[in-house]
Image (cartoon, rainbow, N blue to C red):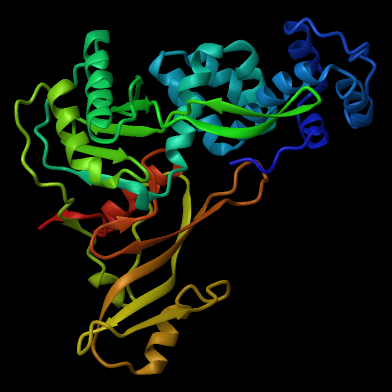
Length: 386
């Protein structure tokens, strides 16, 4: 995601003419001639902005922070995914032609508000750590029911479950989206009321509010899988699975099986001659193993972690492994670094992640991470049923 927000950095990265369009849409007159303002002159903009009323500054700052958070490769990819869903090829061509993430995202924010909500939620889901998702892949491959009545049933069922068990969740809203042949359901049950100290104008006050907590369902009809993100509510996951199956898949019952029983086959990566198959995957330049975690066969409580600098020798980890002459072991975790092809003279992007036996991998299911998963599958590493 984009870096920490600051007004001046934001004004440097967003073209002034886009800022002029934004302030015009808000009917805010900064008394600045944007056509004469130099792109590097952010002090004039900053001084004019901080001269606005505190209430107006707060409203605008919140939107600027939203734009800043989306101004990254993942944010642009999420916007494109929304455009693909709406079959808007013109949007994809137009955003590709704009230079700079902030300019791309501000253009979309100003002109395609219909895509904004879904894209921001996709980016949020993409940035959830893989360890927080609870998956099962033994569901029947049936089409989901996503009419308004079905979504309302899901929201009511979630509300009734948490309210009867914990006394919270009296209200709940569910927002459905479709992306890359997967159905996303973002649920927001009402949490316990809280109070906090806040600034109201120039006065510090203690205010009560009713926050929502979040649950995300991601269903794939093709895979027969359901992923659930329910932080601090993991014990509720089995019931949430049943609720989803009943309201969205129209299944009268659901078995208690909740474990993804597929495993990564890490054994081939014990061989220094192992090569990842990257030819079928567009955009990947190289893949190297940077780290190995070994669990000794004679005592599973004892582990050895090997790391080496692969900058000048892609097989440095294996060279170290060979030099150590270790007792028998199993590979239980592999650190991988993927380098993507450099485009338009830009610096090549990289992605580092761990694969952990039996079925944990810190990759998402979108964008470049999806390309990596395809590469792992072609290479014989991606999980298989046992």
